[in-house]
Structures are given as structure tokens and as C-alpha cells.
Amino acid sequence: MKKLSLAVLLSLFAVNASALESEIDSVQVTPDQRVAAKQLDRSIEREVDEVIAEMRVQDEKEILVEADLEIEQEEAELEAQLAD
Image (cartoon, rainbow, N blue to C red; front, side):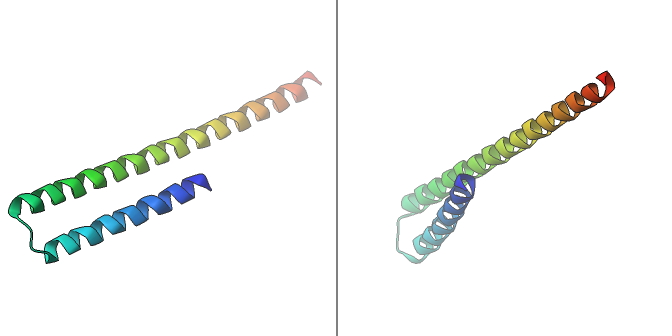
């Protein structure tokens, strides 16, 4: 649940960043301000992408740990059957 909430928040954050970029395009700003805003937007997008990638890695690690535990349980059951 916590991961889902974080993913939703990150998605909303990305949508808001995109809306902010559109708003920046419609407002009279100096070229320097426009460049700074776009750099900030790219930085935010990179950070969001990094967090999402970290979440995926964590999910994959959890899947591997669960699979490893299942294998260990099956091995223990087979050893118990062989011992009988």
C-alpha cells in the first residue's frame, strides 16, 4: 500500500511538473528564468525516474527473497520425505 501511495504521489508530481512547464510557457519570463525552470523540471523528472527505478529494484528483490524462501521450504519438505 505504501508503495502504491508513493507511486501515485510521484505520478501526480510529474503531472504537476508538466502543468507547471505549460504555465511557464504561457507567462512572460526572461530567457534565463525559462532556462532555469526547464532545468529544474528536468531535474525533478530525473529524481522521479530514480525513485521509480529504486522502487522497481526493491520489488524485484522482494520477489527474489520470497522465491528463495519457497525453494528452501520445498527443499526441506523433500529432505523430510527422503528421510522417511
